[in-house]
Image 1 (cartoon, rainbow, N blue to C red):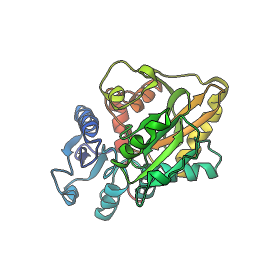
Image 2 (image 1 turned 30 degrees about the vertical axis):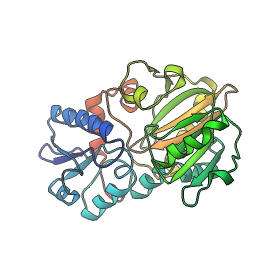
Image 3 (image 1 turned 60 degrees about the horizontal axis):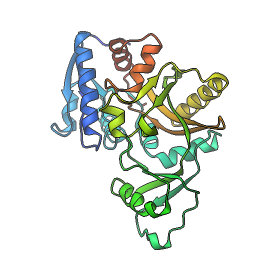
Length: 304
């Protein structure tokens, strides 16, 4: 249902996440777009304003990334306050934020993911630790995004420092086999799979800086996956539905040198910055940024 021009929209951004900076960029881009479209939209930062004040608004447009915003916490508060919001609901948001449990769900459905080893910080003793996966590996926090706390490890002597770097961001971490090949992402919007994007980052290092703050990363969109296109679309839709996602979500995957597909994670509140991938995919699909913001807004709801 199209939002009435009198509808008061809170564009929720910032918050307490380690991805606060990117969230503010996304949120302000969306805020400006909605205002251009004549929507009565206002910035709402949970770090500055108690969340209960969101009852003064009719709809919450969520642009919060990472923990305390993308993990079901804000979604649960909005359900209790009965303020319709955009994106996935409590369960899907919480599950998608947990890379380990997302992998478990996906694996039961036959969605291919990299081999991994799960570790918790409580009582962790590196002197007794046994690596069950062959090097090279990727070490990353279970509940962080934007490559926060992530390391690629090629030599066993670097493993301990990589583990503690990840533990500094989360007390639950994953060690995954490093898939060597091409990096991609694909967007799903309420069951519709959009064009895939190939990511070509400098030295194959798609880190925080190369994601958001340089012009050195190249994006090919739409990217024709050839004989793998149908399978990738099937996995993307299956992975989206498996966690109960709603609205826009972005799934990251890789294809190795043997043409094998590996899905890495799903983002239920993906970025909306000038460097972000979802607006790029929608543009290739014929939808500009302002139209996309309205699509997302008009999909808001409760009991998601």
